[in-house]
Image 1 (cartoon, helix red, strand yellow):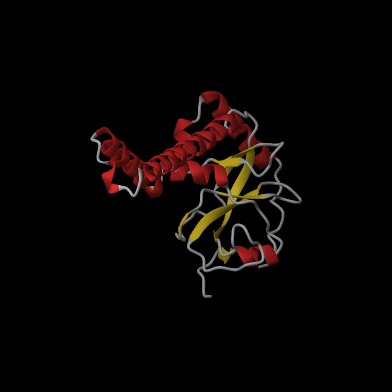
Image 2 (image 1 turned 135 degrees about the vertical axis):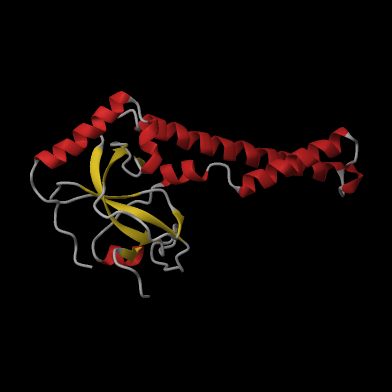
Length: 209
């Protein structure tokens, strides 16, 4: 696969020793209520209309109708809870006044199956990989998963808010997110970036890819 400079597949980075957990917090927040949610919501409204106008004759039996409307309602309820949960997690993470300074490292094409790490698939999504600044053994993070887009600014410094008890949960400040961060947290971001710059040392050398 011929790829532009600074664009790699996830499997290639894994072989090179660059390992990371895909950013599920920002991905869920960015996705929000997807097409399937609105489709099920429309179906629920339609079912409620059929019930309120006594048009249940369209169904094989009243029992089937009730089973269907309960399942649709549960889907909507669980989906809503899931989205709310990740927005709440991101808000909680960003209360941390000591974020981690990172820099944009590469664009990664996600070609590893999310539930089967040994299975390689055709990449349909990508994310920007961020590398921890000034660490001998840097950690790697990703931004929100998105459709394949090779555009990014390499070495741009930003910050990561991480759940230190559950490192798989983290949030990367990307683009417009800077606008919604309060003054106290902005000071934390500034401190994290300044701490990296004051070290006067270069980040750990990249793995040879």
